[in-house]
Image 1 (cartoon, rainbow, N blue to C red):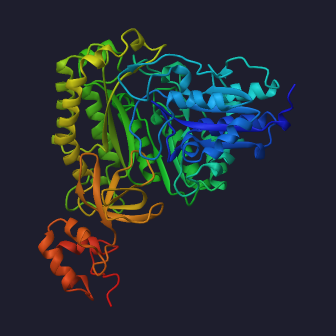
Image 2 (cartoon, rainbow, N blue to C red):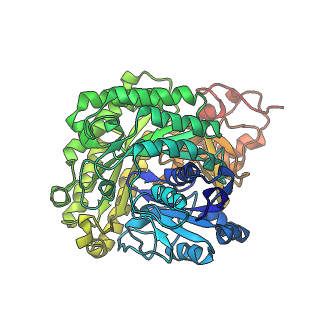
Image 3 (tube, rainbow, N blue to C red):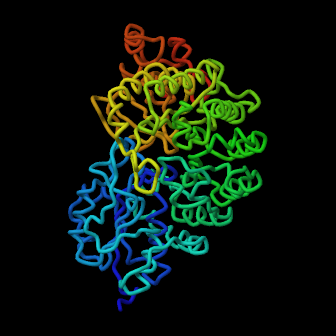
Length: 575
């Protein structure tokens, strides 16, 4: 029998994306942290556990030696909802198999990959359960499998789910893993689990496969945040749950007192946090319990950081699709939920919350505290040509009524065994691919761009934008948070640092920004030209007539971009 104290373990994070769980950089999911904590709890010394991301292994082949030489190699990954990613690229099935071939020791695979594997990480395809040549595949919780496997001397384990008492221990003991992430500490956001499972049974969703909602206590989550904070983490997202409003309750009805303990406790143990966001919020909860939901939303907006997004799983505004797929919220109910979140949390820092929702020239120059995000899913049972028209009408109604949504997520279904969609598979998605592409482009052009301008009017300041990559003479970056805006800044700037930017223009799902406050005596021609209302001729005149002692001596169009405040007359480097 192998003594746990003698084990050398390598854990590779291939990234996860589930309906209620995200772990693509700059996010780190709960899985590697809980799994590492479970192995420490079973007797493996912390210093003998090595953590790598799949991107690390792609960039440095020498790190594959950690996989080859480990007594126990654990792979964690799996995509059950498709997406497009900037901060990292999820492992493809061939890479996962190569890792197993490379490892000389015992191999264990787990995470949502247990639900199935496709030919690639994309929507509109069917998924199949495969072992990908691993010795062991965790059909239950990978952290429980890792604990039992280590505890048994690498002899085996029974597939099981961990309980909350184990989770409390493992979450605390696994916090050290964040220090090994290549993004630590400045550009890493920790996905936090408050619950898993779901009270509803939508046809496509893998979250109900975890069972009915099982909630952690507020004290447990707060303690985990405290441990992560002590390891240098400053950014957190309460994303691992089907519905944040139901936290601490019966799985459906809101519980304001539990949310108050959760959010207040986090703020107490992490006083200098940089990000506190959430992800999933069920609109049916708001529709059925509007008063309690309003109180919960006010609590969240009081404690969170700006730019937060509550993902709403509408999935389809077509009543036929709703009926055939057990979708739990109607278009009218979802619309009312959008209204309520706007009314309670659509205000900006420095504004009176009673004025929400605010936008336009008189709005503050920061993002709203909390807005809904709309999820729309295609390829579901009953989908027809009219489905696309229903969805577009819903989105147009939201816009025409003067409301805001932070983002619209349009994707095609992935069909997994154990869900009702498994019998239909990807057939409908395949048949409607051409219609889907046309409709998606129309939404981007007709809804996304004007909505983005409403959410973030010209001059809106995005603080601490992390510069990630260059493309065609532009530097692109994002803030940390839920569904952060991609910002393009003219010129090629030094990467892997942060700057504040002010928004000047809009794409469909991204924005153009200039450094904030803009130094008029140092700004480039491209930066000045990007300012709304300035143009090339005036920008050229500004450059020719530099330096300036005061912004009052320059064009009025620059006022809101040259001051760190609300449009004073600072000039950063006048000689």
